[in-house]
Length: 333
Ligand code: ADE
Ligand code: ZN
Image (cartoon, rainbow, N blue to C red):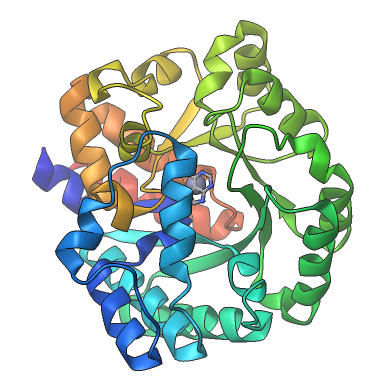
């Protein structure tokens, strides 16, 4: 099964580039930038990666991102992730980045996106991997701050496909960002959002009805509301599910209780993703392997998850068809 998963062509649709920051690279960049990390070794930093909820994690994740200062840093971070994609037969990646985590510290939007974009161009040439970028608004910040970020993004519009919504969910409902999502869509960005990770099913309804999202990041708590599940199935929307993230952040107590299979059985379109692999103990293939074992998924289930990852990507139909043919050839063999 592990071998089958490793070679399965797949796309990753839920990935925060700041969440791919491995401690070793963090220490290396901190050293060259002369920035202090409040841990004196990689081992001690890793020990701090024991979370009891989303906010616990976010506090450490934002702290880690503070060593990123220059274009080269964003390039190195992104290229390291894309090298891992190549090793895992991830053929396409839709990468979220959090501009405000950096612009709030005085790093320019241009610095962030130029470094990320250059790594994506290089990975396309070197590994044949396609990528696209999702600019995520931090929901614990104000609507005004999100509008400012939208404005800053406009010179780089050609490099950005979608907008997302992430960070502390509880107390920051989608309704807070209705207007900035409308403005983002008017600029041509596809609307996406985290919803129902820690927030209730009501937050998922709001993300659907007010933000008009095209895909749901996480979406676990949609299962609390049968009419919401029917609506998501009717609208043919996918959930970007992140099993090891859910385990690390105590969204589920253990993986055998994870609702992924139940979601599939209800007719929901599910994809498997790593979210923040440096913090949650596994890249996308490890997420597949762990959830396959925990829920005894069949090869056909795995093929369906891989198909969904391309079908519900933001690629154009030609690219989707090309990748889907790769999946079909692999699964038929
Ligand atoms: N930012 C990075 N990872 C996140 C997650 N799992 N939920 C919300 N915001 C995030
Ligand atoms: Zn996420």
